[in-house]
Image (spheres, rainbow, N blue to C red):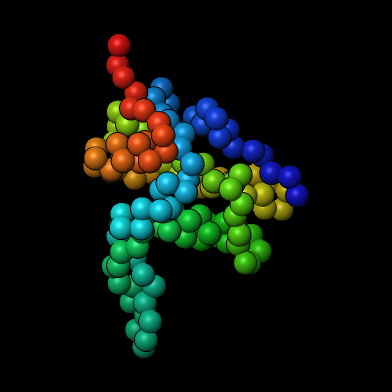
Length: 138
């Protein structure tokens, strides 16, 4: 099953980020930042099954969201992703990072994009760890 490849060299133009400078980094650098936590609604357990707010690592949040969206679109379980199906783009001028996950479901390409606002020191650390430089304005 071939899937539409993500442009790992130049990145992709994403809704809401058109015209914004971005830097593509290997997603493993973001995945390694396990202390970078974001809130999410954890499904409830017990008698009343009320969801509770909890936190999880940012990369795990993006992958869990992608898995949920792909499952809703009809993907068969278990959901696995290879490196070619994950793209991470850093937007240093916007203090954001976007994670794109691609999957083919029933012969159609599906994409899930999650973006997160991050403090400037985290953006800089991601770029340094990936061996990339900040974009300089001329």
